[in-house]
Length: 439
Image 1: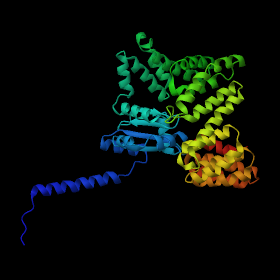
Image 2 (image 1 turned 45 degrees about the horizontal axis):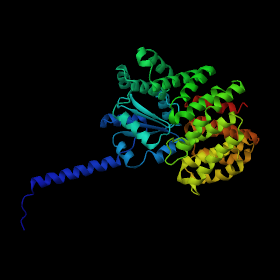
Image 3 (image 1 turned 180 degrees about the vertical axis):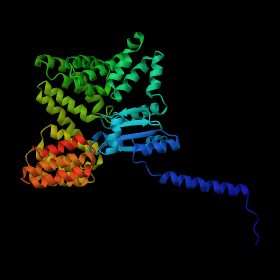
Image 4 (image 1 turned 135 degrees about the horizontal axis):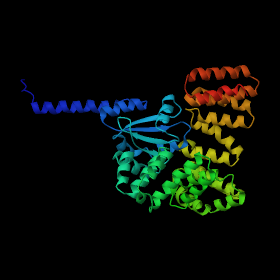
């Protein structure tokens, strides 16, 4: 049988399909970047921005974001528009980039252009809708600081507020205040949101300078405004700054914050889905507020509410939601319910066996209660999985436990091994580790 010559158009379509298949296979098999430097190289080749996800094994908020927000079709669609890299804060490379980008808290999501300049960032836990709204703005170029400044220069109050928000997110308080002071007078007044963000920067400047009176004064102005879910962060700062005030004055100041804080808990933190993502801080700040007001019943009620909510939502499955499971641990610890905490910790270790965190935390808790013999096995288990900065932290507690058990030679070896493995990284933690042997 004689076959005719293949149709050229058909052959071209077949070749195109094969090529597309190969390219698709390459895209699926493409190795994810391990460092921001690798991600920037890939971004330059693909003409995409870099999404740097700063996280750590001990970061409860990071687990909330990874399981509740950075998921599903919305996230998958956004991933295609970026080169995503996970950055461990405890690694040497992660620590270097945190310093370079002025990342002071986790989680933090920094979006970079391929040349390494910043497009914008999302700070801390965020509900899903707020996170994606911020990311859309960043990816459109609308959150780049230079673009915001240019827009603010045209007289837009919203842009002025956005610039101040951007400086606050970057922890560039002094730079933000200097920029604001250089604005024309008409751009600095008359807008409530601009005034609120200006006061937030003033509050943070005062707190860093330990100017408690100025910190409290600015904090009161911020709390009187529509500060939303950030209320508990601002109140937390005011609690710290007001600690040395005369007792009567402090109680008058703080008692005025109870109604708004209770409303936030009822209508934004303890609802599903939560409008305020960081339920832990909301509960702890509420408890701290009641403690400062000598209301032990209110303090207990706030913590009990958090414990009950966590247990109800977790059921018997601690592995279902690590953020919520860790909240339960913290609330029990803060409430002093030690027997329940002791019952919980081995279950957390079993539920999350692949990292050092819960073995370390339980060992630390036992050591703090002068139980070095019970603490040591947990700390040794933690040491097997620790790395970077947390290797030094675990080694410090192991050495303390060994010294308490009159095993100083073993403690010296633990310290020496950890320092050798650490190399030149994390010098402050290394010095603290060395100091253990001098105590």
